[in-house]
Length: 412
Image 1 (cartoon, rainbow, N blue to C red):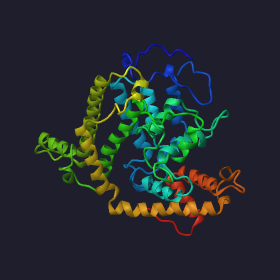
Image 2: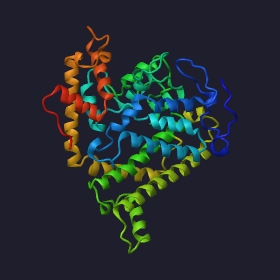
Image 3: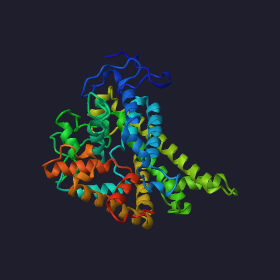
Image 4: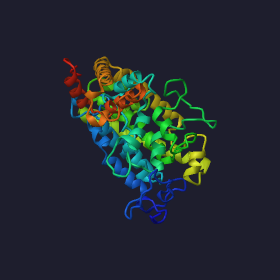
């Protein structure tokens, strides 16, 4: 393997002992020559950025429908924000920043159109056909569905990236191989795409993922908390005084009120101050707790992190409680707001209508999607329809619905 230099990390600092080392990568499922100028994780990051699935994130819903306003977040802007937070955490902890960034950039590639509404609809539709899970769909996208290379399907990413995409929230099976959560047709079943892929490459599903994968996962949590508060305030779904009793956020509002006593801050400035301070507090809290756990566990390698029985990159107990309280507030006041729910119900119907139409008449899909479907079994047909719809952007899904049906919801 190419010698990528010493264990010097970013900013000239030595890489932490428990960081992932690109020189020790477990490689790719399809062997490729090393690059003389980029590490395996840098190549993975670049492949994700140049993928069609990544481009489509710009027109997939985060919380609000994509055309509600240019100031609200799409899956793409959310992904970029997660990547920035992940890079900051990885740099502070002396981890491999490229791996953390690649995982952050790729973590949402499997999301359906219309955010969680689309996912809820797809989960219902795929009952009896292997189920649907957006993390598993991400694995399917990067190993099978994105077909740009002559030598292989997918992006042929390194083992460390695939592992991180699948396990960024923790182990999927116990030491005896029993699934730890319900994702499929029966209680405690692995998601379909992960079950299938595991047959060809072992992703060590019983262990935690690398510290870089854990960084990407917690960066996602931090971005959700801060930026959904931001979008909720901008949309008028919540008001600043309603956040006074929410852990951590209320304290930041109180600090700002005291600091700028007598100053009538413009709403735009107030929202920005709150969100940036919230991100800073959470990032600094994660760094402190992670360093405490590192000092206690003394992991000497990336594999030592995998072997632990607990995550090493995480919130402290107090900050974890604040995170849960913020999410409860957002769920009640933003995600389940009547105006949002009305749109989401229509969005779910769009997905259900499209699925029914394509499943009943596969010839309505483009030629490349109905290839090899003659006489196919129902489960394979359902998975093909699922893959086609899951890859759609919000606006393409609406365009397809208008093509196939007389009436299409406005989603406003």
